[in-house]
Image 1 (cartoon, rainbow, N blue to C red):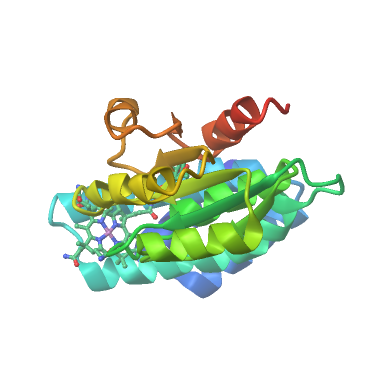
Image 2: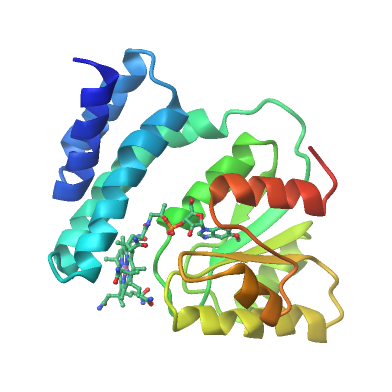
Length: 213
Ligand code: B1M
């Protein structure tokens, strides 16, 4: 079978929520020489995009989205070590987490993996983080950049609270934001130090903020 047909099968596995087959298909593709990035970009992400559209249009419901997310995560677990493989000294530390009230973590995890793959140490504090959690993790790990993720138009409104938490304590760490509903304009309005549309742009952004390449 060609890479192209395997990638189409992989997308369909995510859409249908077939996690065992999605993992197997990823392993087959890698075994046949496909790059981890193309498995992600041309197989998993297009599948997840269809899930998002169908969910929005009322053609798919929450339980189905959950099984799709599981299929995506199972496949990502195979790809993550490959995407994150990097032997260099850390270029810096990035603290990342999804904000309070929000359980979405697939995109955040992808940003973490891409940062790791590009030489950063990542402290990932998971989902549903109130400002206190970010502050406590900052004190513990002293990151060079703090990243906030939000996937809901409601939870992104919590981002300014986290930024204010750092600013009101005089902590000068750059805070960057991202997630499907977040825009450059919103980032500017809430006083974030940067916005990235996707995981690849997030790496560029952190490189620029820390003047690393
Ligand atoms: Co939810 N959900 N969901 N969901 N879900 C969305 C976000 C939604 C757009 C679907 C839709 O209606 N079309 C919609 C939000 C509407 C809105 O607010 N505008 C929605 C909704 C409504 C909900 C619930 C409220 C549903 C309900 O209960 N009625 C509920 C909320 C739960 C909560 O958080 N409190 C809910 C629940 C869930 C599941 C649990 C079932 C599951 C999440 C599983 C998980 O993450 N562990 C889920 C999923 C899977 C989705 C969709 C279908 C896919 C999200 C995803 O993983 N995309 C999503 C529709 C969509 O976005 N197409 C949807 C793939 C991922 C790689 O992309 O997360 O965008 P993304 O990340 C990208 C960029 O955004 C960026 O880089 C990433 C990689 O390129 N990025 C950053 C992300 N974070 C970044 C941080 C950065 C920089 C870049 O710097 C720090």
